[in-house]
Length: 109
Length: 162
Image 1 (cartoon, each protein chain N blue to C red):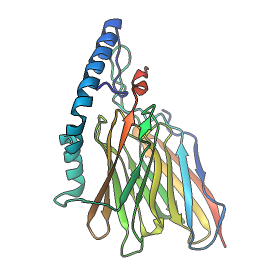
Image 2: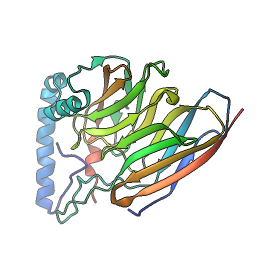
Image 3: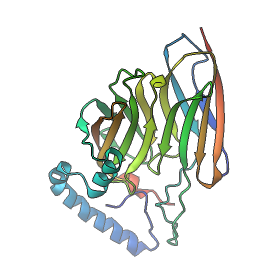
């Protein structure tokens, strides 16, 4: 797996103040479990995303630890309260120096 | 039972042996199913004990949804929702998802904040086998709640080769 990869965030561009919004975040990643073997019996080393964080205007609102049990191209759907206009930034970090950052803007009315 | 995480068929003989032994275990597991449904496995008990410490998780408040029957264990949609007002004084701190039959019991841990609004989460997980999956929620008042879901993973998941 490369050091970074394609990611995507789906969140509403506009929201009413104090409403609960849904955020969908996905990263392109094989999530190699470390429990598989090649045909000649060699163990394939683990290579997964271990940490996902979401910051809303630089304040952490959601965090998740991933283990081998998360499927390839991890998709995570969670909620947050729309408090103010600004940016929602998601960060994925993992094995072998993997890191990906993506952000979306949100306008609160 | 054979699982999708460790498949190593180097010779046709081995494949056959794996296939036959799986058949055997399948037969056994159906006869023992009611028995194994009662008790958690030692690794699972250990994984849960690591989370809750000396506390005893209570049943309820946690709703875990996975399809009762899945064809492939590679991507199984898992949804967890915890009943909580999610205010600054009473909210869900974290939810831990524990598998009974995967090679590593931990699937993921999600940390909520009062800013989450709702303690709900959807993601896609790997399931090595037909099994029970547990969700343990840690509340801000220090109490623990648990919920579970059973699923049947059909053998097609085990045919995956590299």
